[in-house]
Length: 138
Image (cartoon, rainbow, N blue to C red; front, top):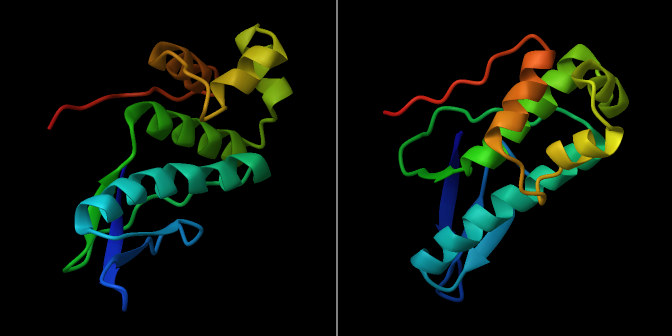
């Protein structure tokens, strides 16, 4: 998942970074390199709002001229896809736990962005929802 970001110079000489698809993600940096690093962190942090509210995360739009691309780590991208599918199918974490034949605490960890989860486990959760997780090298 690659989200387009806008880097706008600010009056203090740094850069303000915004994401049109994820309006909650706003950050800044004193240099372009620092702004880029902060943008990656802001994008992941903003995802927490969607997970807390159990609402779908908007998928990235096509980049426009001048946009910078910020890529989500694969583990976060997989969990975003899982959340979106759960919301789409109106499946609560407890329901998913029953479908996976596992404890509700396990599902809570799977959908927690700050908990390290093996990608295979996220794939199992998606499979229990009738979806298949695919990784493609380009």
